[in-house]
Image (cartoon, rainbow, N blue to C red):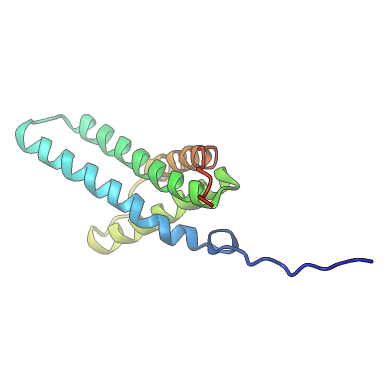
Length: 135
């Protein structure tokens, strides 16, 4: 005799791309916070152009990492793909914003920094230890 069990509901994190929308405020928050700290530092010190570009690139890597780690930790599977989609989504949002306000599309280095940091964050988010829920 074969018994059938009703199929369990899938979480919104697993079933669709909702994790991208949930992780977007994390990435944008980290980006905004670090860039505001960078702007405050620039009020008191004059730095050469290459240093500003380096700090902006590091900021992009950190924001991609935070977004990928958040999504990977919540989704708990396929960390590199989850992180890559997070990086591409954040890149699309930033490119659209720069096209609207600055009328320029940016550079491919921005895409590389965001996707590299997001993949790194997605893999580390999936592999992060998860607490067991209380009973």
